Amino acid sequence: VRLSAQRFLREGQMRKERKRLIIPFLLPAAILYTVFFIYPTVDALRMATFDWSGFTPTGDFIGLANFQELLHDEVYWSTLKFTVMILLAGGVMIFGMAFLFTAILSSGMWGPFSKKVFRAILFFPNVVATVALATLWAFIYNRNFGLLNSFFEMIGIEKLSKVTWTGPGLITWAVLIAMVWIYVGFYLVLLLAGVDKISPELFDAAKVEGANQLQVFVNITIPLLWDVLTVAVVFWGITAIKQFEFMYAFAGIRPPREIWTTAVYMYVLSFGKRDAVFRMGYGTAVAVTLLILVAIFVVVARRLMRREVVQF
Amino acid sequence: MLHSSSAPSQSSWKDGLRSKLLAIPPATILILWSAFTIFAFIWIVVASFKDNRELFANAWALPTAIHWENYVKAWAIARMGHYFVNSLVVVSISTFLIVAVSAPAAYVLGRVSFPGRHLLTNTFVVGMGVPYQVLLVPLFVLLTRIGLVDSLPGLIVVYVALSLPFTIFLLISFFASLPSELEDAAAIDGANEYQVFYRVMLPLASPGIITAGIFNFIGLWNEYMLALVMLNDQNKRTLSLALYGLQGSMQYTADWTGLFAGVVIVMVPTFILFLILSEYVIAGITLGATKG
Image 1: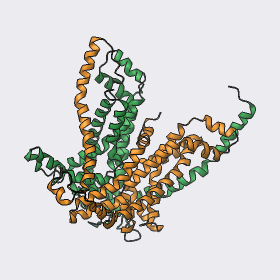
Image 2: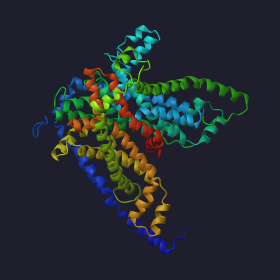
Image 3: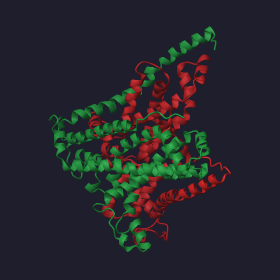
Image 4: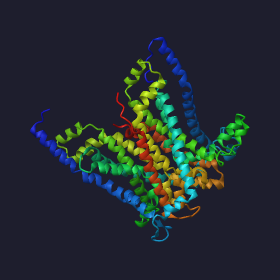
């Protein structure tokens, strides 16, 4: 390509002109982000080393005492256990279902329109307020009048119609099932988009070679979906570890301890009016452990999922 | 799996039949799952027109009469109408500001090369991994110090700042995917750098802008945790926070149908947005994850 001298000069000038945008275009975002995001994050690390009720101007510096206390805090460990249960058990169920639905929706069994309709229906809970979903599920599980128990009564399974689904032992699973129902659509959308990007010729070639559907899914779809899957797993980790709104609104004004995530515990410690603990330093230390958990999860997930780049 | 181009040989016909049979159980699960989802939302709308006695007698029965009073109660007595306006104002202004601040930043980060560009991009993007719990106390203290705590402008500032990482991440991939020919052509025709951005690149990126806008609007409309922490005055509540409050008071009133009316009021705007713009919403999730 031969550029005329004039055009060449103009392009150099253009690049210089565009560079003049850097500061004015970045400044508003950078200022807001620094003041209301980076600074609070750094400040959290400082606060986590303080004993502070929020009522005095400053608290007392206590070093790592908050974290030492955490080690022996039974409530903290039980909330962390539930958080990890959502992350792992919830994750397995969500990705299992999302894979199943991806396989079936991309199998050519239904046309593109039905595919879009199913995708939209399954995704829909993701655009509804979590507090609304929590209300819905609270009524589904309601012991006396709920949809689930009255359904079992209707079809004549007396035994199941008397179960307290939100009772001890069951409530964690009740919440988990609701989580799966909410999030499956989100990960289905991600995985389906990944499948759509795979060249149809590969599927045709595999067919000609005589591969069956399962072989195609395991040997072509999953390897080529790997990058999307890695992003999806990381995203789920971040989402799962900060779960708060559903649990906090699930059982009225005071959710039972069994479904406290660590994020709920953090809120109760720092701001909860019902129990009025107001331990802002300790609460922030709890939050910092969530940040650490996210970091560990992201690093581990990326390492485990790293593999040779597949090329066909 | 895709494109079932049926080869006429015997074995592939058998294979086709077998894989069709194998597909029946998962397809059934998918259909039941979707049916349940549709049912659940229709049910809650129907139940919001019942009275409580009917609801408790049989949750599955249709209402015998349409009880609009549930909506009157929710809208007027529980003041959902007032909170609806609060949410509309806070969420609209926040969404506008988020996009107005993020789009130019994403344009520069996505299309102009300069030293420190990757570091800066990563600094914004890594914010997506910070659980909001870390920020709650420091942000509350900061807003108190600058006199913005318990105010809607304060909540807007929090919403804007916390939405930057995802929005910038999303818009960078939109801007980066645009062809540079038009940008260069406009510049060669003598447009200055601002004109190139506002007249050429921004319109080209409009699907991305719409996606970012709708994503943030829906997310902020639905969120109640930040509002719960940052607001105290009942008059200033957002709609989702008000629904949370209504849910709490339900423990004493046992007014489930009134609560369901509140649920429907919260759901309707995002439902309509999704109905009209679902393609944009879905594009928003997929673009970030599948680029490259």
